Length: 473
Image (cartoon, rainbow, N blue to C red; front, top):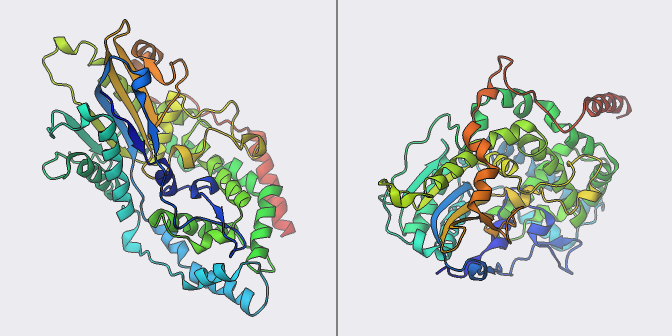
């Protein structure tokens, strides 16, 4: 029997790295000029009852690919944030002495009492909130799949794997803590320095050269920044904060990041830096960031999709071993748990065809893409996760598969309200399972050529506009 599953979706979205206005869940405070995050509302739970479409089925394996929980900024972000106290003081001076700016007294009071409370020694490490992210995620999964996940720990029944970083190891520990009541006694294998399964892009020179370290990957983002929507945003935010000149994108990012990190670390408190932006402006900033990740780790680049084959192959191979389980002597694990980073999550989704829009994200189609599926704040926040559950059923089609993204049922194409025939999934990814390799990653001229969904004409336009702007500014 499968229990009802309380999914704390709103809480997960509040703690993500790419908080948009929707996920900050803004409400109007009459004491303020702008919409602000509520400080008093408790997270709402979404209940999912799969009994209606899973009669006579029982789960026999749980496969999870999870991003680490909420972390501290990296060293470069922490360094950039050191300028925020000075920027804060300028904003206060603009309002109090120069009589410029449009922030309300409450926003100014919050800004005045704000202090930067992160240090370089904490860079990229998991926060206390991040530990709770994974701990309570495990408890929710355990509630949903008790027959699988409430078993006593055994290394034969539960497999853990994480990348070579403190935040993924701590996330794995937190997940085990939530699942078994304690991580003591759990076998955590030593992380691989070059893990081609759950961090393949880090071992792919071709991806690093053509995508990861290539400025062309950011072209659509930069073109969007030079467009009228973002130029108006910079002008409006600058005036709202009392400046007679335009702030830079570096300063915009400092405020935007602090707004999101403050909220991620303290999900029930309000970051004064969020008051710098309106609802529409936060949506624009979200799209600007989505343009970066779409080409860096998503559908905007064919290499990203190819790199997603390693995790998909692993899932298919694990499930394939369960088909004839009664005739095998070896014990198959009940749970396989992988802890990685946002790029690996996005590449896996791209390989599976999840969150795919009918058109590419570009600098010129913001309005038509407002309801896009590819929103990093939805698909790859802190503690984002893709779970695949393999079921054995007493019916003609003996084996079924269900996917969950961020603990939401995925209405996967070709499946019945998310319930997939295993034969359909196996056939769909047969080539991935049999042919997946990283041979194309070499830089010796072999492998497929990079296919960005942006043209050299766009690249040329970007260069021309950039040169022209240097003479205008």
